[in-house]
Each structure stands twice: as C-alpha cells, then as structure tokens.
Image (cartoon, rainbow, N blue to C red; front, side, top):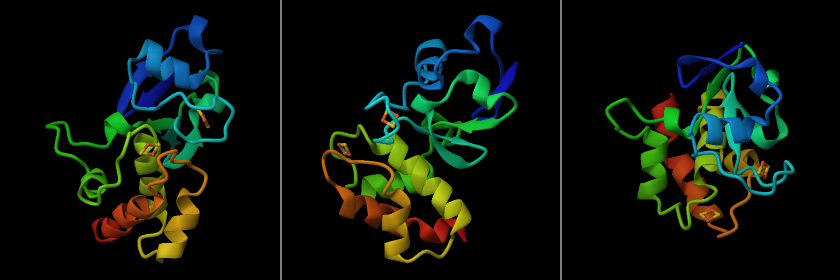
Length: 153
Ligand code: FES
Ligand code: FES
C-alpha cells in the first residue's frame, strides 16, 4: 500500500501495515516530530493531519491511512527550512516551553485555521482543547494561533 507523507508517496511493506502509525512514523520513517505521550488518545502529543484533519496517530494503524494524505510537523516548513507562519508565530509568542506538545499544537492549530480563517479567541481555545500542554502555556499558544490568523485569509 501507499501513503503520502508531507507530499511524498511512500510505499509500505506488507509486514508493516498493522503497525501502530505513530511508531511507524517515528521508527520506520524517522519522523520524530509526533511525540509519544499517553498512548491512549488523551494528550494529543502524537497529533498529525490526515487529509488536513487532526488525528491522534497513537490510535491508528498504518493500514488506516492507506491512500490518505498525511502531514506531520516536518512537512510544515518550506524545503529551504523557512518556517510556516504559524510555526514562527509560536516562537514569536513564546508559546514553546519544553516543546513536547508543540508539534501537535501547531498541527491542530493549522487544521483549525485552514477551516476557520476568522475565528474568535474562544473558538481557538476550543479548537486546541483536545491537546494538552503539561507546561500549561495555553495563553501563549492561543496568542500564537490568533497572531497567525491573517496568514490563512
Ligand atoms: S500519545 Fe496519542 S493521544 Fe497521547
Ligand atoms: S510546552 Fe511543554 S508540554 Fe506544552
């Protein structure tokens, strides 16, 4: 089967199709931006986008994403390394403390802004609520998403 990750078609060996998707990304493809947290679907550190929708990859098998379009945090920056405006907004807003939740927060924020280019602050707060920040830097994370709104219009 084939999956498309960050715009690149990737063939998956039959022996790996039943593998947990988060572990497949991290261990087979060395895409380590999605983090291992609770492993139970609660924390969102493993968030990736599947067809531009946020998904907790710890809850999926590789098989579940056959023929889907996957975006991981590694796919957000330009090929020359220029950060996506939302990534830059996280830096500018001081929204990164230990950074463990950051890839998932950027991706859930990105998916939300793609669908809702004119959100209220409260809309943003609700949108990121499935993801947890154990450093509790929520205000700055909301600031960052709010600051990037103009880039999605
Ligand atoms: S590691 Fe996937 S939701 Fe926590
Ligand atoms: S910045 Fe540490 S968990 Fe969010």
